[in-house]
Image 1 (tube, rainbow over the protein chains, first blue to last red):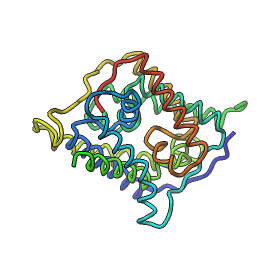
Image 2 (image 1 turned 90 degrees about the vertical axis):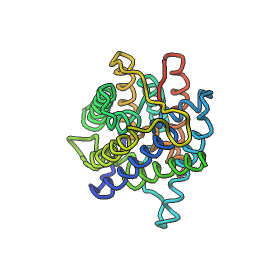
Image 3 (image 1 turned 180 degrees about the vertical axis):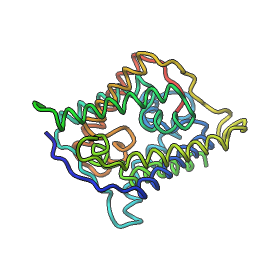
Image 4 (image 1 turned 90 degrees about the horizontal axis):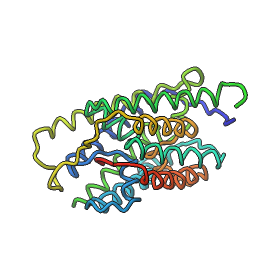
Amino acid sequence: MPEIAATPFTPWLSLAGGVLIGLAAALYWWAQGRLAGISGVAGRLLALSRDGAAVVRLFFIAGLLAAPFVFRAVTGFLPEQTVSRNLPLMALAGLLVGFGTALAAGCTSGHGVCGLARLSLRSLAATLTFMAAAIVTVYLTRHAPGF
Amino acid sequence: MKFLVGLATGLLFGLGLVVSGMSNPAKVLNFLDLTGAFDPSLAFVMAGAVGVAFAGYRVARSWRRPWFDARFHAPTLTAIDARLVGGAALFGVGWGLSGYCPGPAIVGVGLGEPGTLAFVAAMLLGLWLARFAEPRDGG
């Protein structure tokens, strides 16, 4: 059972961060004509997809990797995080996320942000499904006896 | 130029994840913990992100092509089928077990937590395994 680290409700910071994400999605569309779905960016890079966008994807991923350090350069702090040290669990989770997002052709950014922003019913179905599955999973692991 | 913009886009996206708190699995898990340590912040992230992305897509509605490519690459799949729902369900379970989805996990790599590294390695494996099972689209 993972310990639960309480986190404060941060409406303005979260809204601001969401706006940045939305801006990034818009920029990716305006500049490259593609949806900013991270599972797709990573998945296509991994699959050595020969659609001409491989180098752009590499730079995009590099930007993601650099973000905590740019954040520190500006604020003086590294981003705060509490990450489980249960490595088998994290590996299982990663496997499910990788396989599942590839099957669904999208994740929280691809379906949840870009898809919903494009009023896609398919993305709505995906988003409702992964939200429900995640909520049930957290409920079971945190509150159900025997877990 | 195209690559610099790509870098800036990834950086902007990553900073959004950090500023919003979504790069902290605990914060995500607490959003999903509706009956427990519920932290509504993720809803505000989604609202901001979807709202701005919606406006951004609309701005380009009449464009014939993006800045650095000959055409737009919009997804073409529309079916709500077993693959979509099954995949989303699997993804949701993994997300609920870890508090990580692909973007935040990649952002977290540089911070070096062993759990992050285990997650990302396995995620890459999962992404790779799934290609034996699917059509892809967009992105």
